[in-house]
Amino acid sequence: MTNIPAYVALTPTGPLVPGKIRRREVGPKDVRIKIRWAGICHSDIHTVKGDWGPQHYPLTVGHEIAGYVAEVGSAVKKFRVDEKVGVGCLVNSCKECANCRAGLEQYCTNGAVGTYGSLDRDGTITQGGYSTEIVVNEDFVLHVPDSLPFERVAPLLCAGITTYSPLKHWSAGPGVRVAVVGLGGLGHMAVQIANALGAEVTVLSQSLRKKDDGLKLGASAYYATSDPATFTDLKESFDLIINTVSAPIDLDAFLRLLAVNGTLVSVGAPAEPMSLRVGSLEAMRRSYAGSSIGGIAETQEMLDFCAQAGIAPIVEIIAADRVNEAWERVLASDVRFRFVIDIDSLKK
Ligand code: NAP
Ligand code: ZN
Image (cartoon, rainbow, N blue to C red):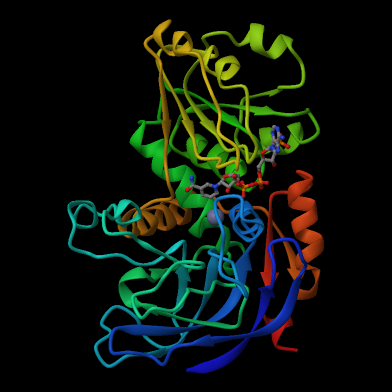
């Protein structure tokens, strides 16, 4: 076990503070990664606050990790020292159930191990990327294409895959009218990926404040959901809506924007339950669905796709001691479009 520097939550409500966490020694199949960049996902905040259930504290969050391989175990085949790598939301799964075998490790029936706050196979609680190092089984480590700007890679490991996976599953592409609700970390990746897949993209944001950015990212239209006219003007105009909002939304109002056979997919994960009228589904044979991150092979596919399409997150890089301020800004929808912690600042 090694003690390493990290930013740590001690309670659900207090600020994150500098501290130390323990990392296991490198096993035969493990890769020790020197973390260089760590993205701030809204899920980090939901988790620490206990929005999805009680947690074990102290807890270090962060599941958008980009860094360099520092050491490989004796049986590691896929990685070499100094290679650029990524780690996302998963660090283990059973690898045996039907879902794991189908590359859907995020839906492992025996329980996938999340990068933080999860019970690991060795009985410890996993600790995330707001730290200088992590040790991960090589099957859960991703290769980072050289053409991606390294300081912008980390958010792809959650925001990128969480939007890529449903866009692919629901066949976003030429002739498909996609709306993205919420232009935050996930939303701004959904717009870029849907556009790169050839779909026609509309942003539905609370206001028109980020309209110029949304159009530059690849949307062809941009509407404010605070304007009631949006919901009449856009009636039955989309085939697929990706909801990335971190708070409850009026599902019926958004369902009415779907054309016949359309699907509304929630990836946003508010603490509170949401209700809907079944009539909103029945009226146009619509579907309401959810989606969780993506499997390991699909995450690699997404990284390669983004490299090839020349797309990457828009990031604001911060020193580690600004993490609490960044969390406040995420909660206030004041982020363009992802905060990334410069982990070198944590070592000082
Ligand atoms: P984020 O950067 O904070 O973006 C969320 C966006 O939602 C905001 O930028 C804002 O966009 C909009 N929004 C926020 N509060 C709102 C409200 N009260 N009413 C209407 N719109 C509101 O968060 P994120 O990191 O993208 O994550 C978004 C959600 O996805 C979180 O709940 C997160 O936990 C969840 N998530 C789920 C998965 C999964 O696997 N399913 C993975 C990662 C994250 P505008 O300013 O444009 O309105
Ligand atoms: Zn996330």
